[in-house]
Length: 441
Image 1: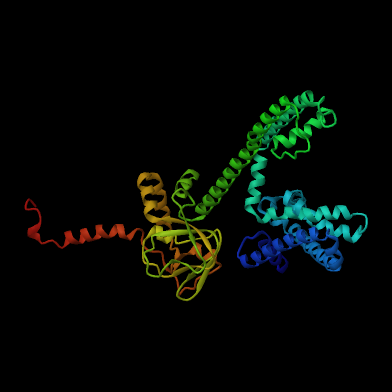
Image 2: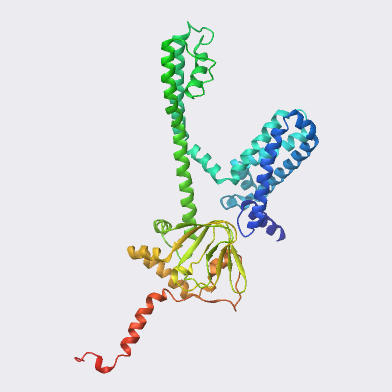
């Protein structure tokens, strides 16, 4: 049992899931620091003066980094069967499938230099240097932007291949023309088409080293046309990658936002299109560390999703911390009461805000959506869902908090402010004197 608990805890720390966010953040930042330091040392080690002065220290640091990366790889392999997509394959096949994934291959490459140094200290110097520098690829695990860029390039590989073929065709045509025009004037520099290709590449890419230039008038005219074409040709793949990267970032943000909204119990039974409509209502809000998100006593008229950072919710008897991916304030969409807790940004936060008024406007436009949300809200109230301060039962579980019986209360009545005018009107009619009623009665 203890072994399984340790394995689960190790998985949560390495994969940044569950409640061990602080430990996961420490491990992630530590590994990123080691990767950057390792690459920097691998570069400085090739400088003779620095290598002679700090050679022994370099060896110790490289061995330490290699040991850490090897332990990391083995630990990730150990917990591989806990990954949801791999659980059904069993302990052995799940690890083999995980080992074949790109991230795991990069982790293995990061650990190989230590093995080469220990078992082949003299025969693998060049390989070790290359593998140490390839540890840079490990940063892709911890950089969503870098992963999105790789995905964008992979998604547009056919378009990039097509643009590359166009560029190569222009280079080949320019080299051939320059060979035919300049071979008599400069037999050493344009003695063949491959020699002309070198000139064409430097010209099309707008680098222009100047070591090979045309001397004839016709050659200069061809060179000018090729240089002008170079700007458009180089912009072609850049534009493809830029648009794909922007689309990838937008898609990733939409999926993250959609998944956060879908986790809210109030919306979990909605269709994908309906959740997308709710997601469109979200507004971005940036709060600096220590900034107040909501004061005690304010009208609770909005709920929050934490896109990045961590918030601190100060209840009467305890303080609750919620991190990235969590949500709070669901009750604000059900009944706009006064807040009973102060909410502060524990670290710099990026929040997504859903206002109750915006949701009601959407519900007014879509009757079916309104029925589903109201039905879910009434069911939650009738089944006796508990709340502590501003947090519903599900929101407390996100923070690993289980409320005591003394602290809990029933979930408030649904949309009380809408029912109040009707009750007042009914009471007013009941208190009217008999003679004020319709004389026909």
